[in-house]
Image (cartoon, rainbow, N blue to C red; front, top):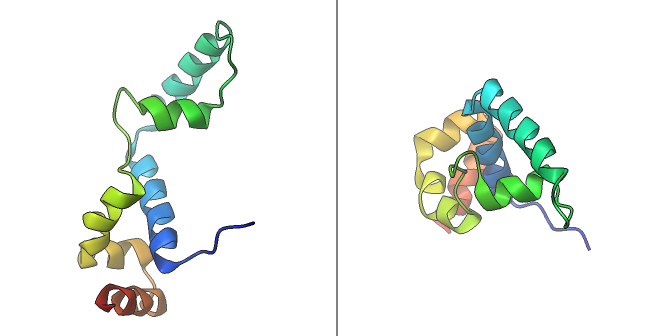
Length: 98
């Protein structure tokens, strides 16, 4: 069954994309090259996404969903810029008020 998209889940996905956008392209390319080299020696196949979730970029990664809800989600200015859409921002404000 597919997960229902809520404003919180939308914002978490947008936040992760924003976080990834801030990582340099060179760093992403290096990560993928290292993944490729390491995957040739792995006995248990993993995807780049699984490795990224576990190890991040040199130990750095976006925060978990729970941490996001306790920090970035509460930053109205950050969320307003992330959404850049008045209707969605008003939906966020309504959700925040609940």
